[in-house]
Amino acid sequence: MWHCLDGDDDFEFDFDIKKIKKAEDSFKNAMKKYFLPPEAMNVNPQIVWSPMPGGALTANTQMLRDNNMMDKYDDMIAEMYDCVRLGGFGTSVTPVSQFYAQQAIQNVMFGKFKKFAPGYAKMVLGYFGKTPVPPDPEIVKKASEFMASSELTKPYSTPTTKTVLELNDADPKKGGAVAKKALEEAGLPVTDENIFIAASCKEKGILFLKDPSKAPMGCRFAEDSAPKAAPAKDGITVTIGGKAYGVKITGEGKAVVNGKEVAFKSEAGIKAAAPAAAAAPAGGTEVKAPVPGTVLRVTAQSGTAVAKGDEILVMDVMKMETPVTAPCDGTVTLNVGATDKVATGDVLAVIG
Image (cartoon, rainbow, N blue to C red):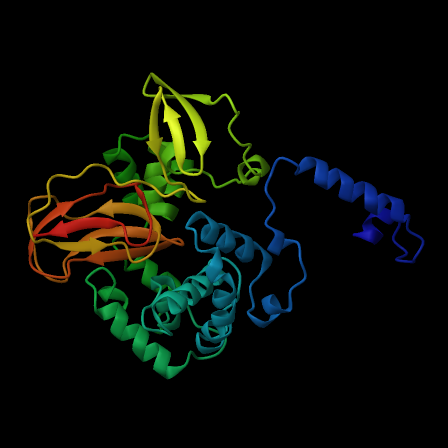
């Protein structure tokens, strides 16, 4: 960059270092409203060891922040080494860098290669082409067994040496015609741009096109991470659903709301409250969220019978589709719906 700012082609050391500072100042001014993750601006030998390229680093640490899992960052980076080495050293750029990070967080949360991120498993099984180095045979075996355990991933459980073009041509769920049909069923305009979005992102793409507010772009602003000012001594007015509430904090865990003293509890971060659910069957078995994430789609209906192992819903966790299955036979009562954000331990459903 220094030589580019020099303005000539001799590559000699006659550049004006003041231009470098001016360029940096211009960048800071242009980016001042955006939150830049501190780990993206530091030299860290852990990243070289991982390896975790810059684009994937910021994308994944932002997702960790979104899911209140940033405390898992160091462990995830440590797991990256084996995920890359045993996975065949696939080129660590999008989407493969995401596969590595997704598998690393699976290892952290559930134990080393006890569960597999579908993208990572498909990669070691050959569904994204040949990796530069053959994946570890034991990892291939474990990935195959994991993918075979679910009807959702079973079609990708057998290792393959077919080319990506051959695989895509044989997949009835891929292609422009499939994307066009999805747009038509959703009542969306069939344009080249929309076909690309629907084909690339499937349900997430359709959701974005229907209601962008439920599929945010993901830009983080500095003001969102800045410390929030304490409520004024005289209190504040909070309006919810058209009704105003006068709130005054009077002490630790104490407040006066519309003249009435109440106790409250607060903690850092935002945990989505599950919507009110139908009365759960007595003695039911709770189905809890294994990790934080967003409900991508619900595949069971409240009041219907499910068998042990049936898929109830699918969560979007760190860009992974994570199925949640019934732990027993019974009648399911759902507590959540598509696009709901949930935290670890939230009750997603009850099976009576």
